[in-house]
Image 1 (cartoon, rainbow over the protein chains, first blue to last red):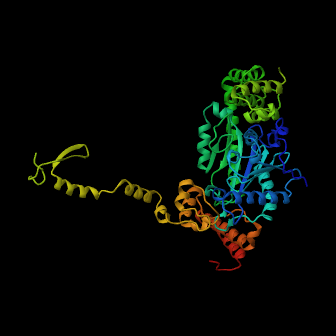
Image 2: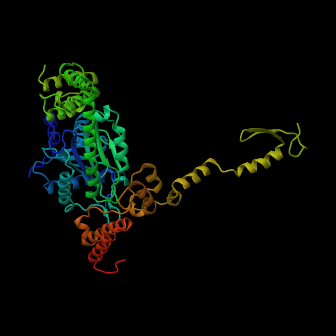
Image 3: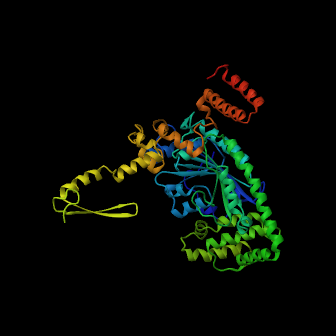
Length: 357
Length: 165
């Protein structure tokens, strides 16, 4: 089995994205992706905040080797995060392959993932091992099936820290028990425009779920993209937690669809004008900030969903949300860029992708 | 000015006392002021007030404050200030403090999810029983006695004992 331990060329990845952005799967007009992660620790080792350099190195080696032995996918590659540049780490964060905390961490740590970027395994993040599966569309159950299998392969080789009372033991007690965070990324522009999004938040919170921005905890909402995930991890089984989330998502999608219909029936011309103007801006603008592009892409994405715009694929739009982020633009250009340089290159890149130079 | 307390010595200490919205000025000699000072000393210091506040908000802290994990060296206070545990053993060492915290965070303190196969069949059985008991409680709450009877039988079956507890 191939297992590239030496860093692959990250720039090889820069012009494409993982399978989860294909824009396929159930409800994929509104649900962009479904993600599950499991937090696991190795018994008889301290958690990372108390581990010394030697223990961290030992852990990294043990977990990396076990991942290799487990033969999770045939094309798994491993990147040691301590060996690569900050821009490369930012790039991996933008692709959702590692977390911001993992990128900003210290010492020996790494990530393994396959070509499809569906499964990623973070070594020495906040916990010794974090397994993640992302799938396109509303497919939490399928994501659970995949991650459960990966976890089973690994638990045969790694002695996880586990107690019958508290379940999988994690560095932060907010993750203990299942160690599972399941989240669904949703695109909700009409609920934002009609100011109904607060109602969604309140309803979701009552179920013990939380709403976060594109990059998880503490991140800002942009491009009308929201992540809905479980807060509690103890006292309910993995499947029960998934079912709670699965129960609420269809209600939010139908609410969003209703809000879109209301926008059309109230003032179709105005909505169409907004969408076409955004599309036009993407095709002609020479400078676009990262904040602006999220807004423009969000409007155009809704336009495609509503059948107003027909000449652009959903996959292309989904990918542009990621490919125009600062880390990606810098990898594409092969050099570090200032914010102003990025804004120019971002506009040029989008024009090229939309084939309207 | 004579001391207003003993009316003998010269008043050298001037105090301003505010009770509610009423401002009161007092002029005392050194000896009498000393007596007042001792009374004032009985008023709890800011640290004492803080401690009693902590006791009200998080009563486990003062009780747990001296506990240090012998495995990783993390103290309970360090855990409470950073929110991160030091090693898996902390869940046992800090159990008393953790249980109410977990209850607050998750609304539960008992894992009912996946069991690693290494943990063995006993654990799987224990967890299944736990889950069945939860369901039984729910059924009883809902007064669904038919379901409750089914669950009871299932519990007997899994535990292999008619009087498991």
